[in-house]
Image (tube, rainbow, N blue to C red; front, side):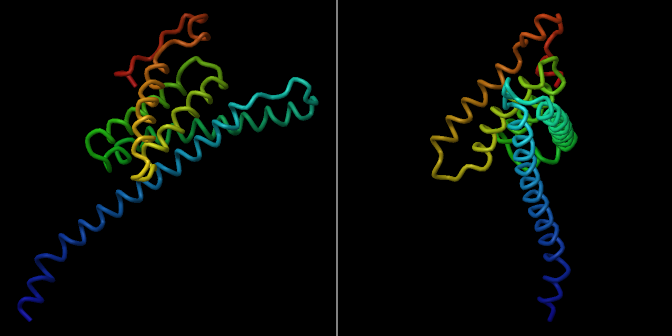
Length: 178
């Protein structure tokens, strides 16, 4: 009886707190994966070119839907940036830096002077690589390493000024300011 009471009062609170931390970390990782999917779907819709021979009514409908998808993409990017500490905090070392880099880069792209199509294409490319890095299976090690290299290349490319920014004279946001 004494041993049972000792375990109940000494060990159980720590075990419950640990369990809650683990569950919160898994929940945050699932939310990040869901956000990657949502922002990727919106970016996919925006990255598709509208056929030149499309009817005026179709063009107007697509314009309205594209505006809605752009707002969804913007909201998801902002939500990820607002919760960066929670999402990145569930990882350690290099994965934490990758998550922070992804979220910061997506937010920087959304704040840039690029066209919506260019923003969507860059975010789509980044999100595809990020999804494989985070959610890839253990037997996909080679593919995940390639995705990491491609991801780093895309992050570097996103820091270069786009054609729109060169024409408007806008300065790209430095990575440390993101």
